[in-house]
Amino acid sequence: MNRFAVAAVLVPLLTPVLAPAAEPPADLKPFQGKWVLSSATLGGRDHLDDFKGLTLTIDGDHYTVVVGPNTDKGTITLDASKSPKHITLASSEKLGPFKGRTMPGIYEMKDKKLTVCLNSEKDDRPEKFEAPEKTPIMLFVFEREKK
Image (cartoon, rainbow, N blue to C red; front, top):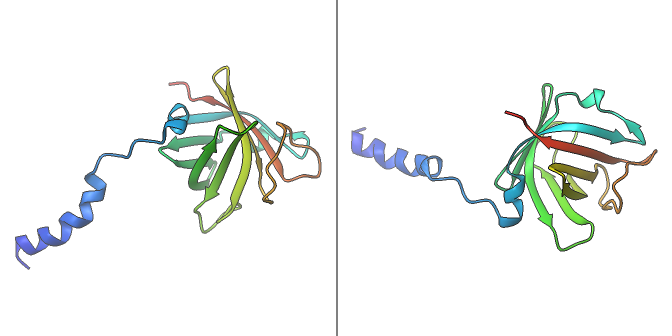
């Protein structure tokens, strides 16, 4: 195969990689970057120790959650017109606890902290920032990673 044929094959494949990253949607701009978990409540109990080191990275309209050896990735959408504001995480992973699951939730950004309350098992969106006993509701508070 001559070099022109190789170029004809490689250029279309590499073009998306070389193209600049898409600008994130306006509502997601304040969320861009890496966030570190500072509080975790599940089933009415503090679970911060169970999620020690958990990070949330938002890049464009994609999220990545890493805790220990576990990773979850997917898309994030917001609806700030609702009260409380809506967030939806849609996992694109084929393995792991949230594989292919869509998690509806609510969020608020206040005092440089991001609070997210998600339903991890059902389509019902939480209405309050709480994670009561005997529910699949998760309440997380994140702070920006300090560099």
